[in-house]
Image 1 (cartoon, protein in one colour):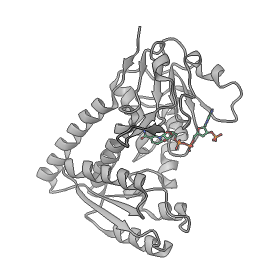
Image 2 (cartoon, helix red, strand yellow):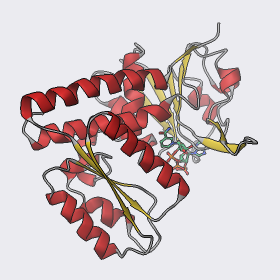
Image 3 (tube, helix red, strand yellow):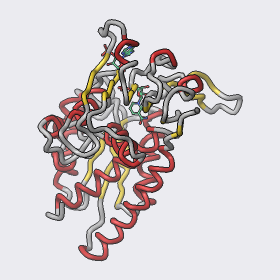
Image 4 (spheres, helix red, strand yellow):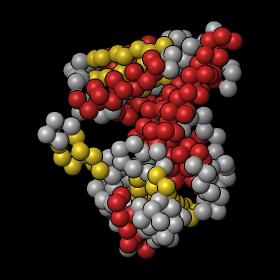
Length: 295
Ligand code: NAP
């Protein structure tokens, strides 16, 4: 039987409705409006499109939102001063610096300058460390979205074999660490695979929940998946263009073949993608509450 499709679009919509209600209530009860600044350096088309999407969502949800566009030749010191300004701005609760940054700027230096309480991307070492010890204020947006999809789809994670393909700092490592925590929507036995893994299929075939974030089109084929597994495809690969100039996307999983074997699967597009921005909004609401002693 074909797998149930886990629609990130639908789940994200549901969570956005919940956020809207919470924003309304924060305004009414506490005169508090969550504030998000997105800092964009230069005009890389992909970055412009990501930042525009984030700002549009923030506005739709009733946030105070600022888009701060800076030229590609901004100096590192100027950018650090800008972050310092937003660190001190009481109307701004979340600061997002759109990556990648131009080569002359040290990315880590910039990310580490963000006040951890305003670090809604959860890339600051303080937040990475808190996640590791099970005391996270914020979860990085994509792993947070994956976990919410599992919880809201009723997937049993307790005691499950979770196999993560990919060990990046933004997806693979944090989702593996989150799934291994003694917590709701977690408590799983976790394996992390990467390019050094010998016989990848031997590991993926053991997975009750297979999370793939490799950035390789159709790297996971049906023979690598256990019958009845839940498959979360994080990959977004541009494999061509439509005649209208729209990117043709595919995931890291051979969706058509794997959906015949899995019990649940996320599509690309419409799977993990829509969840990521929504989780950024959830983190910003949390940051506003933290700043006002309400969390
Ligand atoms: P990344 O930094 O390139 O990391 C890819 C990871 O996959 C690396 O750890 C790499 O191993 C591993 N890998 C690559 N090929 C492999 C293979 N054949 N077998 C086993 N492991 C393999 O990528 P990322 O930033 O984590 O992103 C992964 C994918 O998710 C990309 O397609 C990206 O566009 C997408 N993504 C989507 C969202 C979303 O919101 N939907 C958000 C973030 C990322 P090594 O460490 O050994 O090199």
